[in-house]
Length: 521
Image (cartoon, rainbow, N blue to C red; front, side):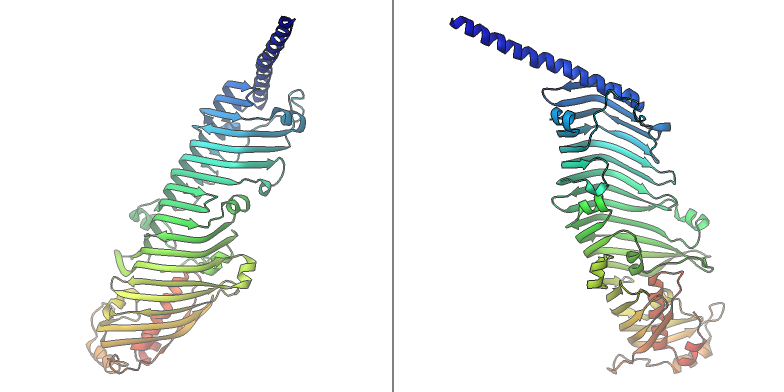
């Protein structure tokens, strides 16, 4: 009697075993054939090595190629794995739920617009399971190399892309901000980006972003001009400056990756830019483009179209060098800034934040023209229709003849000798003009007037030196502040307006009134 029970148990176990094994084989083969059938309908995907396991809830492809219409997209992956699929929910609820998607060795070239031809509705009535939502516990992409090219010439390329997304959820047919995820970790190396029609391209060595850590680190970032200095001078329109910059490291702390991905917004608590090296080549601009317009920094922020909020931006140990191309030669201007430390706060265009605090503040200190200490405080109005601002600053000891090349005084005169001990300035400006006051403490000031051939006018030089204001005022203890006034040239940047404002104050401080009135801008 007992033997009969053992036989029944053995038969039951064998039946169960055969059901699981053979059922898995039959169903897995059915799913594999349905995948291949769907692929043939798409006419854009080539798949090899399809392996399906119903029991394990997994699908794997050893090789997959996607080719868009007219070759607009070409993607290849050496390995694609889907595991932990809940077949019951997929079949009965149209809910594609799984544990993991892993793509390895993806190589792709994409050209916009994407026009892959999808199967028409009703073309495959016996294969479709309508998916209403997707949920994946972990999505991972390892060592992908992607190039993206737009018809307008914009191009993006990155190698060594690694991406991990956890708890990804997507309601099918819903807007992009309905997508949810708990964490994203992204890294890529050796990449570049160029906007169509631009004369520069961006290039980097590494980017690392982590949503949970709220961090973004960019290393080896460079802004590279597409033409040599010679080609730039000969062929590029005069109104464009040639920029060359290196950003060894940019770090964002408290970075909101979800806002960037879902809302195309850039939010961060702190941004630190370290050891920037910027070189600017400026054309000699005799005839400026009448239609050109250069907005102020606060105007750029408010009209950027990108929701922006950076609480603190810090710049450390940085350098700005300027060169001027004239009709005769390439001159190196001694108006560079080195050892720059700056803090910018309240960089935002969010309506509620601007209403609460409409001022963007900048504190900066640097070494000016290799020798002089410079400290300045700048307030930019974010809510003002005329984009007004205020600037207060102090410039330390400077050899006065060095100001000749930096400020381009007119008519033809030069400072022959003297030393500037201290200069303070305080001015306010907007989109139309800038006005304020400037005070100079200087010693042993002498002026030389020049003719059209840059030869010294001896008699007039002697006369002007007799009438100099406070030839030596550093020992008197009282320094008279002089007026600053300079009208805005909207074809030039805010820095040109600041430069003109300070220059007007210097002239008012050192030149007799008769020579000031004769001088034109």
